[in-house]
Image (cartoon, rainbow, N blue to C red; front, side, top):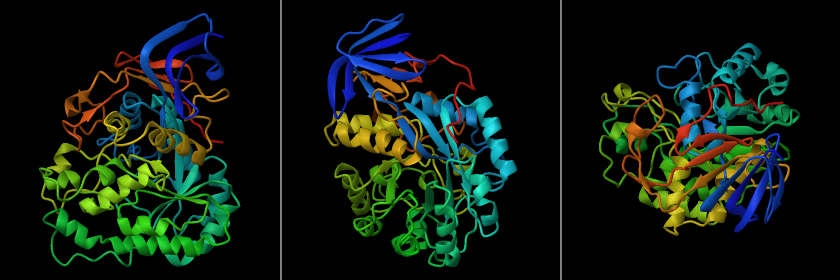
Length: 427
C-alpha cells in the first residue's frame, strides 16, 4: 500500500476508529491498524465519503463569463464534492457527437474533480442517441423552458424513452410542463409573481406524464429538483426505477423568509412556500428523496442585480451544499446516515460510478471534517466565478482535507493539485 489514513471513519452506516488502506487510487483494506509508505492520522476528526453532485451547470462552452469547468470544479472540490455531472444546456448545446466530444476534451484539461457529461434530448436528435450513449453518462430532457433549455415535445416522450431504454443510460428530467407554464401577461416584479407563472401544478403534470410514458420501460429515470409538496406526494407511489432529487435552495429556503434582493433567489422551478420547504426537507429525512443535488447554475452579480423581470433564473450551490447539510447534521436536524445516503451513496449508484462509500474496491474519495470548526459562508471565500451565494452568512462545515482517488486535493483548505487532475468517468 502506498497510503493509509486513520481516524473516526463513517463505514456501513456508523463511525469506527480505523485505518483505510489505499493503492492506485482505490480502497484496498479497512483495518484497525495498518502500515503504509505514507500514513495520515486525523485523530478525532471525521472521515466521510466525498459527495457526488449529479446536477451542475458549469456553463462551458458559451457562457464562460459566468463559470467554466476550472472554477466550477474548484468550487466543487472545496465543498467536498469529488465527482460532478454537467448538464447539456450550454451554447452550443451538448446534443451532437462533436459537441459532446469537445466538452469532454476541454473539461479533461480543466477539471479539478472527476466528472461526467449528459447529452440533451431534443425533437431533432433521437437518431443520434445510440452514438451519444457510447460516450455520455446519461440523458437530460427538458419538459419546460428554463435557461437555454432544449425544446422537447412531450407527445414523443414514450417513444423517446423506449428508444433510450435500449442504451442502458439514465434519463434525467426537468419536470415542468411547458403548456402549463403561464404565459406572462405583465412583467414579474418579485418571487410571488415568479411563483404565479410557474405553479406547482406544472410539476405535477410533468411527473404524471413521466409516470405514464415510462410504464413498462426499464430505464433508470431521475426527476430533478422537485420543488413542491404536491410533486413530492405524487412521487410516494413512483415505481422502483424512478428516483428524485431536491436542491438545498428548495429544501432550506422559502418565499416567506426575508431574502434580500429577490432576483438573487429567482430560479426554475421556483423557490416556494415554507410548507413546500418543510415537506422537501422531511422527504430527505425520511428517505423519500433519493438525492440531494445542487443544480449549481451561476449567473454574474451584474446579471442578478438588474430588474427582477429581466434577471436570469439560477443560482450557485456546488460548494456550499455538503457544508450546509453537515451543519444540519451537527444540529441533529438530519442524521449522518440520511445525508451520506442522499449526497454520496445514491448519486453514485444512479450514475454507476465506484464512489460514495468507504468500502474496499471503491475510489478513495473522502473528506476530513472538524466538527469544532464552524465557518460562516462568505461569498469572498468561495471559488465560483459568479462571486455570490444565496447562503451568505449561513453556518457550515467545510472540509479541511479532500482526497480524490487517494490524492490529497485539498489540504488545510488549500488546493494541492493543478487543473486537469479530474478524470472523465464516462464509458
